[in-house]
Amino acid sequence: MSKRLRSSDVCADCNGPDPSWASVNRGTFICDECCSVHRSLGRHISQVRHLKHTAWPPTLLQMVETLYNNGANSIWEHSLLDPASIMSGRRKANPQDKVHPNKAEFIRAKYQMLAFVHRLPCREDDSVTAKDLSKQLHSSVRTGNLETCLRLLSLGAQANFFHPEKGSTPLHVASKAGQILQAELLAVYGADPGTQDSSGKTPVDYARQGGHHELAERLIEIQYELTDRLAFYLCGRKPDHKSGQHFLIPQRADSSLDLSELAKAAKKKLQSLSNHLFEELAMDVYDEVDRRETDAVWLATQNHSTLVTETTVVPFLPVNPEYSSTRNQGRQKLARFNAHEFATLVIDILSDAKRRQQGSPLSRSKDNVELILRTVSTQHSTESQDNDQPDYDSVASDEDTDVETRASKANRQKSLDSDLSDGPVTVQEFMEVKSALVASEAKRQQLMKASRLEKQNSTPESDYDNTACDPEPDDTGSTRKGRQRSMLWQGDGLLPDTAEPHSVPSPTLPSTEDVIRKTEQITKNIQELLRAAQENKHDSYIPCSERIHVAVTEMAALFPKKPKSDTVRTSLRLLTSSAYRLQSECRKALPGDSSLPTDVQLVTQQVIQCAYDIAKAAKQLVTITTKENSS
Image 1 (cartoon, rainbow, N blue to C red):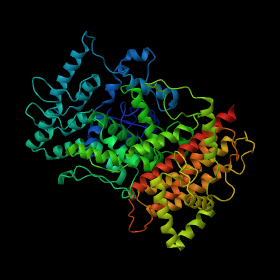
Image 2 (image 1 turned 30 degrees about the horizontal axis):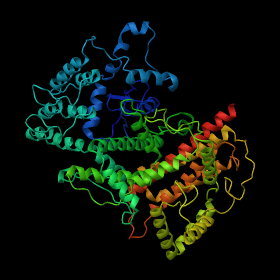
Image 3 (image 1 turned 90 degrees about the vertical axis):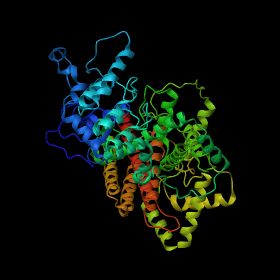
Image 4 (image 1 turned 60 degrees about the vertical axis):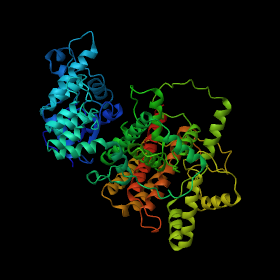
């Protein structure tokens, strides 16, 4: 379900027309520019959803609409309504203000600092105040006045408060009264539908007892919201809770392959986590899924100039000050997982969540979470950190870090240079390979078998693949790998190959205008691909990916073969390798061997991730050239 916007709707933060996003936990509608700031604050501050291009549970959308129409925004701007605030110079942002710093500073003050929320008189014991507010919330949810409950929550009332005299939580009261919108609001603020009252009953029990069947079904959906969202991310479907199916675990195409002892030990380590730590990990992965899905919607709905000129993409999860620095760093590193690695992690979490919920004993599963974590960790320890856009926010580590030695820096540079040794495949070469594969079924089967074997051994398909290290020396394997690279990567590359180790680095960069023009062409083609994904036009994937590859090739050709800047080389490597992977993923969407069924939804998610990586790399190159050419 999506919302049909009215012409009278305006952005809650700047009064701009036609807001297309909603902040669910704030009960407001916001415009694109203000939404970019909301996203940078994190889901613990603002949970944003697109009003048209995101699937909404009907009652959740109704809850947000009710709050917006009834003036919930006045809760967050209470003191600005006072004429004295105008005299003091404090004012609301307007549509003509710049996003940075004007709108950004206002939005942070409004939602992060709660600078304009009505404050209660100071009392010596803050816990007493919170308890009183929670008791008021407990009583208020039996009515339909959402704004009153949101105001209490904004002041510190607890959605999971257990009333000592009543022996129940606010969600029990709302469920007994059949207040489905109140239940939605409480759930957004963390109310647990599985909590039992003093009689051992849950909110679901009270909803069924009162004949509120729609509410009871919705509460069950809320209870399994985390695992449902993870399953939907991978396969586009959710479990049928009405039939008693509460978990849906997609299967990988390579799940039948035997994995290493390290992979088996890794799965056992995941299963050995305490329930508390496992729940934290699952919540972090849920937030990362939300970030990736919102990024995909963002790329599909923004115009080209915005994508390349504004800092609107959220490259990793923002810092949550309530979490430890170690957890924040771990959350941010989730963004470094490629589509296959992240899908594997999600599947492992779904499997273990089902096991824990059902109380099943530990299984001897062969999935490889820790193998992926170790591979990604090793890989990224060799990447250059000299980047205008850091991979992570500045978060202090809980442990002292060792100072990097000069030798390790030299090894890192050597590894980086070797990773940049080959150039991207040309369109002609790709078409030749494609024709050869179609003409020879036996050769196609052989390549697919080799590809599965390479995935099992974690060996790269090319020098651009995201892998941690080279495989063990093997005459047969190295010969086969050499043939594949010579077939796919022959000819002059856009980046230097290993045959030119002594070429002089070139400091010359293309003009900013040329880079922006090529980036706009890339993003235009990416938007066409994302629209095809939204409309399930899978036969359009390959033509779109070919156009993207041509645009990427033309953009990479603007840069010298041996860029002097490590940052430029790293961005070019991400750009070209992502374009190659995009073509590979798009080919998987075509009907293939019946013995290897294709999960189109999983392929689509991988395609979206590759497209995002291309857009991110292009934007980095725009930023770099703009900075260098202006200095």
